[in-house]
Length: 419
Length: 140
Image (tube, rainbow over all chains, first blue to last red; front, side):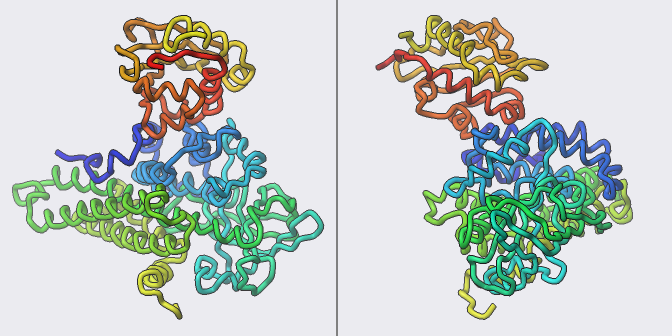
């Protein structure tokens, strides 16, 4: 019988190294995470169980070091999106909340991580911490209390509503403002990538600034963990910046280029979100296949009833179509020499929004429909479906939510002028 | 100049590894609590007429043995790298990066991938040491 390894993954586009890394994650998850997954789900406030697990993946399995250059102790992984897809799927199949925590550790650094827009000075300073023996976690601080999706809506709002300010004072940036919701905030994050404006109310791309702030910088405070519907392994809190001072060199690139290369992070975010949706759907596939095979109704396994078979088919079509679409875009972003546009091209960010919407709709439907056929068993903790059902919802809400993603995708395909 | 691959070349490589401070520094944890030995399977072509196995014994930043073996089962290696001789040669010449070859799948690696990820600096130092001395090559 087919397994999750029979869903679409173009072998010729994924090196055996990356495939084997995916197997390592799967093996680790089976041995270390799955036996305590339900306990992890109750650990949202303190992360006593989650923190050591995060170290095992980010440090011991080397995920944190994947994209840093060799010179600072990284693996300088080529084809980064293919790598993120494989590992994102595997991690999300175990726990979507844990997947986002692990993947977001270096997400905020994407605008300085890759050639030709590497900032070696910053990578030399912070790379060894991410690639060292101790757990060191990054956090991309984007959303603000009053802004919601406005910051992500850079195409229309153009940074006008960013309220976190960065003012140059001699050789230092002075940062004031507040952020909320970022993955790995609170006690988890060691280094924040903070989206700021250098001029309040400005729509000039030159005023959009990405600035690094180590968590122990004077004036930075964090709140306690939000209690959410799901995603317990992903800690989200408020962050306040009260006259926080960091060196001038902590700005990623400077006027214009901060925004330009940040768009690559947005594209990677949309695609990694899709990989997570695929991972969750593969978990649902395994659960529902087992349940409908062993559960006997009216004298035959549940899956042998036509109405159930329709749901099972619907799920696998979703996995196949989402995977195929994801891998097609992955090839485009990993191989600009073939497709002719840069990975930070805004058009690519808009285009991948459609993929993200498709994936989040698909995963929501998959979890819900599987639960429909598992009945109360699916609704209970022991059925495990309810965890994925609770966790997946926020994937469609983050990075601007489905509304912004829809408008941006339409803007790309139809050249919208007013939306 | 030693011919790559040969036992004389292996001796040169062992010597280069043991005199390279970068290998010693970055490899202090390599092979300490796991089998860090390598087998490199060079597949024929480009002047090499038969499959050739290079064995490298490495632990704690030092190389204790490097030689050709007739059969990989003669030795105990934690990592097994397979590739065409034509793909190993640019690495030995210093023209191509070993880790990039592995992660791109040009060279196939069997073993604990996470150890490679975590010790990329050491692996790179080992690869750099290969190209630190003059070699001759089959087929050239």
